[in-house]
Image 1 (cartoon, rainbow, N blue to C red):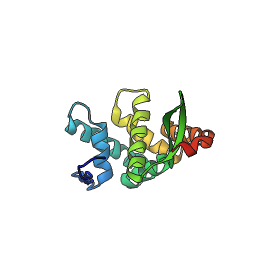
Image 2 (cartoon, rainbow, N blue to C red; image 1 turned 30 degrees about the vertical axis):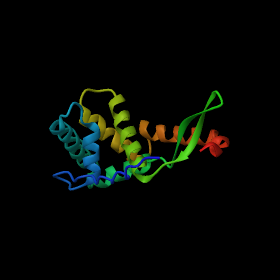
Image 3 (spheres, one colour; image 1 turned 90 degrees about the horizontal axis):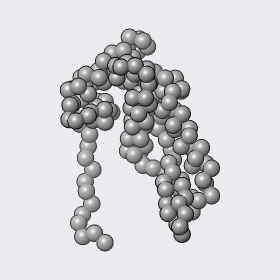
Image 4 (spheres, rainbow, N blue to C red; image 1 turned 90 degrees about the vertical axis):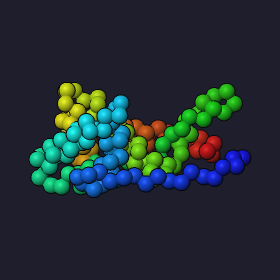
Length: 155
């Protein structure tokens, strides 16, 4: 048993323009090699494109996309008596949000094209509508959890 106390939860900071924690989480996930200003540029260009296409608040589109992509349950590999089982587990709210963001960014990186802002804005619009690669990933995860429901007692 650990003698140390539990680590306190870090609260995410706000981004400078939208004053939103979710946008800041996105920026931190999209950032590569510590280039935060480039990550901010990509996110803000994508938000501007969403606003031009939808003629609504891009934050509401972002929230709706993340809400649609957020999974309720995930599968975790557990090794029991020589065989590996995919055990469905319920996940907490912060982990759900992190998974949704990760899936959105992975789906937008997979899209054809060169500009990440364009690819991310397209993926956001698709996810808000209920289509796209990130939505497919969520449905696939839910299907796998449903198929392996018999291993739920291994939690």
